[in-house]
Length: 210
Image 1: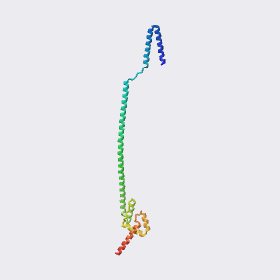
Image 2: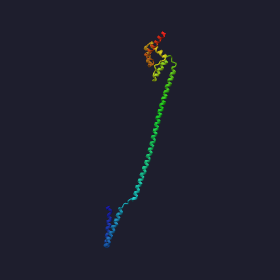
Image 3: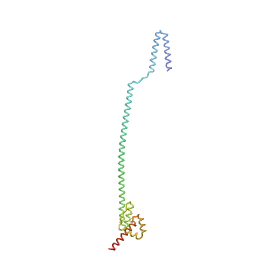
Image 4: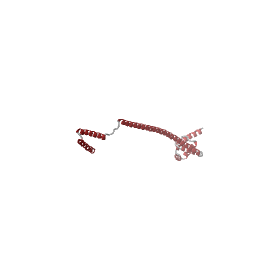
């Protein structure tokens, strides 16, 4: 700033000296005033900065607000679409889960049905193959199969099985206990055999008396 002002000052001094030499005192004063005005105008021109008008500033601010408002609306619309998409997907997931549970239950029921059919078929095939067994062996094996399948054995015995148990117990009580244990207690207990023996004796005595 100082370097630029020094030449102008020297130029002003030269002009003042020229005026004082060639002109009267009034002309000198008038020249000095003109130089001051000229210099002030030059300084103002150098220091002046163009300013944006108030109207342009307001328009720029309004434009910025409009852009921000448009951006907010766009983002809000996108967010609403995403939320709607999420709700739709959640609904589909629930429907698929319900369908999966129904299919699982149906599959389990079908599996149980197939297992029961296999058991019945196996039992029928076994019974068919046991038809050729002689005497009490068929009834003994049948009771053993019922017990192996988890069924409950009845205390009602076939006459052939009764005769087999009575005969084996009469021949050897120890052998009867062994066979009964081997066949999983499918033969009657020895207490039951004792009741049968007592009942048979009473019936025999009654028949003899008659």
